[in-house]
Image 1 (cartoon, each protein chain N blue to C red):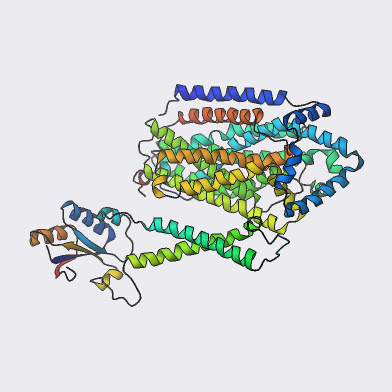
Image 2: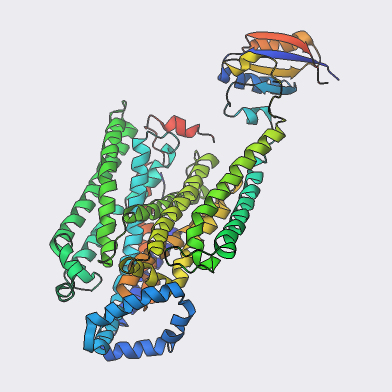
Length: 176
Length: 449
C-alpha cells in the first residue's frame, strides 16, 4: 500500500474540475479535494456516491411533524384548552387549521437543524476540532487535490503539471 | 419539423365529438319550469338534504349557518317557498352554462399561464428553457381561439343568456345594498370593456413575441431577442395587474358580497402549476415520439421542480385564504367556505389531496422528478385537481348544492381538451421545434443539473 500522497494545487475551479477528470481517467485514486467553495459537478467528477442526507432530512421532517402535533395537542387541547376566537377548544381536528403554521415551522426546524447536526457528525466535525486541510490557502483562493501515489512518481507529477497544477509536492500519509 | 400524428388528430376530434354530445345532453336536460325542477331534484337525490346537514354540521358551522339562514329568511320573507323553487330552477338552468364556463376558463388558463411562464423565461434571460420555447409557443397558440370563445361567452352572459353573475340581474341588485355600492365597477358594459382590454393585451403580446421568436431563427444579430426581452418585461407588468383584475371580474364577482385580497395570486398559482404541468407532459410526449432530441433529463427535472414548487405555492395561498377567513369567522366572509365545506366537501378537500399531498409526496425525491412516467402520472392528477379547483371557484355561486360531475361537466372538459390538443399540436407543425437562432440556445443544450 502507498503511504505517500501527492498534493497538486490549482488556482481555478474549472482547471481543477478538468484535472480531476484527467487524473481519474489515468486510473489514479483521488483521496480528497479541498476547495474554498463548493465546485459544481465536482462530486460527480470524483465519482463520490450521492449523499443520503436527503433521506435523513425527510425522516427528521416526519419527526418534527409528529412532535409538533403531539406538542400542540398537549398544550392547546389536553392540558389547558383555550377558547380563541370562539373556536371549540376540545377537539384537535376542528382546531387543526390554526395549528398548521406551528406544525409547518416545527417540521422545517427539525429537518434543518438535525440535518446540519447529522452533516457535522458524518463529516467528523465538532467545536474546537483541529483543521485537517493540509494547506490553509484552500480556505481562501486555492484548490488542492490529494492523489494516492502509486507507480511511477515522475509520471504522476508530470501528469498533474500538465493538467494545470501550479504546485506539486509529495507528502507522507499520516493517516495511513 | 413536427408532423401532426394522424392518431392524435383523430383523438382530438373524438374528444370534441364526445364533448359536443355531453354538452348537448346537458343543455337539453335542464328544466323549464319550477315544477320540473322540483321533480328532477326529487328523482335524483331523494332525502339527500336531510342527512347532509347532520353529516357535516359542527358547532362552529352551525353558528355561522344560523346567521346565514336568518339573513336569508329575512330577505325572502313570506314568499320563501316559491322563491326557493325559483332559485332551484335557476341553479339547474345554470348548470350546463357553469360547466361550460369552467371548461372554457380552465383550458384558457393553461394557455395564459404558459404565456406568463414564457414571458418570465424571456424577461429573466433564462438559459435552460430555450429548447422548450417552441412547445410553450404552441400552447399559447390556443390563447387566441380561447379568448374569442371566452369573450363570446361573457357577452352572452352579459346579454342574460344565463344567470351566472348575480350582479348582472337588475332585480337582485335593486334589493341588495352591498351590490348597489359596487355598481360603479360591476356593470355589464364596463365588465366587457375590461375583459376586452385584458384579452387584447395578452393576445398582442403573444402575437409579437411569437413573431420575434420566429424572426430570431433567421436573424444574424440578436435584435429580435432584445425586442422580445423588452416586450416580455412590459407584458409581465401588464399581466400581473390585469390577471388579478381578471380573477376578480370573472370568478370572484360570482360571489359579489365576498372578497379575498389574495384571490388573484391564488388563481395565478393554479394557472402556473397547470401550465408547467402541460408543458412537461407535451415535452415528454414529443420526446417519446423521437422529437426534441436535445431536451434531456435535466430540463424535465427542472419542469418537475416547478410542478413541485408551484403546487406547494398553490397550497400556501389556498391555506392562507382559508385560514384567515375560517379563524375570523365573520359571517359574510365565512359563507364562502361554508358552502364549500358543506355542499362541496369531497371536491373541496379532495383537491387539496390531489393538488398538494400527492405532488408533495411523489415529486419530493430528486430521482422521481427525472422519471417520465412519474411526471406524467403526477401531471394527470395535478391537471384534474386544478380542474376541480376551478370547479370549486365557479360552481358554488352558480348552481349551489345542485352540482354533479355529469354530462355537461365531462362533455365540456372533453370538448375543450380536444380543441386544445388540436390547436396546440397544429401550432407545433408550423415552426422548427428548436429555436436555433436564440443566442442562449447553446446554454440550454449544455444544460446539466
